[in-house]
Image 1 (cartoon, rainbow, N blue to C red):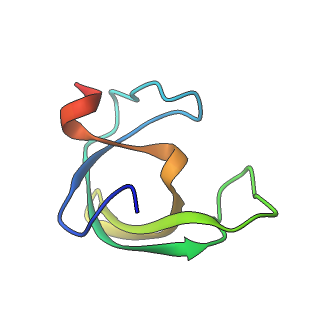
Image 2: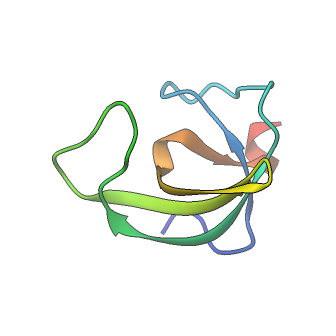
Length: 72
């Protein structure tokens, strides 16, 4: 797994660019499955449940996340 529960992550674009308007998110759990994003994959991928802006977001693709330390 790329991230672990408790990791603080930044939201990125599909190209890996930091989206500075978004606050960081907290990884709550991770696994293998199918994301709910716009670009649905036919192959299972790493997905995460995150705490973001006071709410839970589920099935977030790892492609949209980066560790805060790497993203700054």
